[in-house]
Length: 417
Image (cartoon, rainbow, N blue to C red; front, side, top):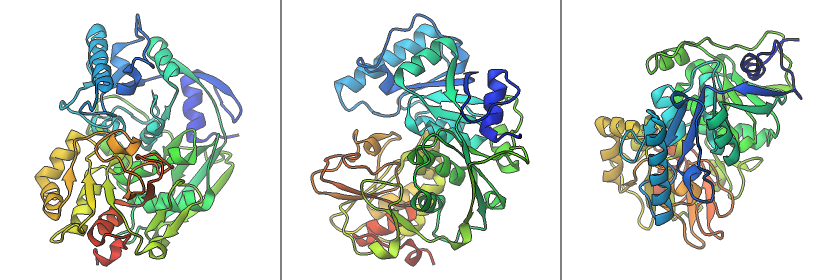
């Protein structure tokens, strides 16, 4: 029996000829990422050795700049850890800073066939690069940093065949909301994306889909490798790699087709992403207090350029806050050079530094009681972005930007004809 992409990589990294659903394997890790939450006193354990400093990346991203003494202390502990073990791949505040999953893309930290872990749940973002990337627990990441290995139980794989081309003002976020809305959670499963439609999706669009796959409760999310992916990786790293494609006779739990050409802008209603999406038209007129564009899922230059195209020459509605958060300093610089940042600021947006920030209810846009936010970030469960009585709708950056202009949930196609 043939193997899927995830099964092939698990086999290669565990030294086995084959791996099948249900197998428990110990695998070698190529990249281990620690971030500022790992260094909070309640989580941190004093490590006496690391497996290999060249395999470790340290990122300060969740609370940047430090909003309180606990965050500041965690940042200091992280800096001391980096110095102690001579870790070169360190992303400090203001120094090539960014959300860890965006930095994986910016710096080529994940390559086809490789393995990567971090204790942030959206680590599956890295699977866009035809590799295995997954969030693990805090103790597991410390074990991984010391031993250079971890274990996984292989789950079944569901494959999505993407076909067609996204219409104007419809994005990869909408494609994900379609999958989540129709097919629900994929707990204990891997998800694999391929098909002729991926040719029309650039890396940023594909990364939105793998990042958001965490909301399906998927184990691993992987994309097939093609020339677009290969060129992206080779432009950013000299690390050698080999593409991993599924076997023609690979066994899947299900194979489903998604017609990108038939999609329309979607919105996930508050408190859940799965089985909870509606067409934007059904929610038009819903009032908002805040519009948020950013996160590891939708803080790329493409996302900022799209939002800028929506608001160009217009003003954010009175009483609405439009908060824009580039996912990394690289994205921020590129959006400055292109003029997207100026366009957004002229429209009335505030630009925050690259950080996870309000996406996880940390800072830079936390919600008050009974406030309503429409966001392009990663999660919308009750209390995720602030006070539990607040309501969080999720949509694409285009829909968020359009809604900011109107003051209620709005259809971006009306601004991008």
